[in-house]
Length: 251
Ligand SMILES: Cc1ncc(COP(=O)(O)O)c(C=O)c1O
Image (cartoon, rainbow, N blue to C red; front, side, top):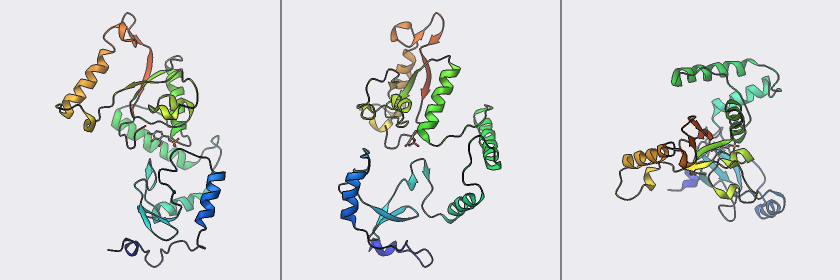
């Protein structure tokens, strides 16, 4: 089976027409001008993608690559979905962007949907605050927690959890490689083992492993000597536990 043929676009969905790329020149320019993030060069040389559809991205030769993120990790929408694309186009033609000081109907309507859903699912009333991405959402939540806990800044987080690249988010992200070059992180989280059943010790069921990890965490609060809890005043040095419930690539 020729995978290329299978992915040729049907009429009306032709790939974007363009002059063939000078990939060697682009890669040379990339090496010279683009920031050298630590995830771009997993493959050497990196692919340069020029088109997309559904679950696939395409290089200049039209070779499809299955993209399990399909936009990005938290928004796996699939590429060129006509309904989503049209909604984006409509929004750009209606109100593309307005300052956060101003109100518009969609903001209020979406807030209501999320708040009502939260109330139904977890029984908590709340209001919705928007920001521009994951790291900023984490930063906002750190502020909320610190405000609520009168400035307490120590957090628990899971080993393997990833929360973003800002300083606050890096301090609760487990991988040291995200902090290595940036000095001391005084507010680094205390990282707790993640109950990942595929990495459990030999001879233990997934359930036994989970029970063991919960017991180990509980033990921290048994007395003052484990460094997190003062039983006399029933107060913890820690303000929150940040949980990335489903770890994909892991932090
Ligand atoms: C669980 C989680 N939290 C936070 C972030 C950071 O989001 P952003 O890259 O939008 O800052 C990510 C990004 O991959 C994430 O997966």
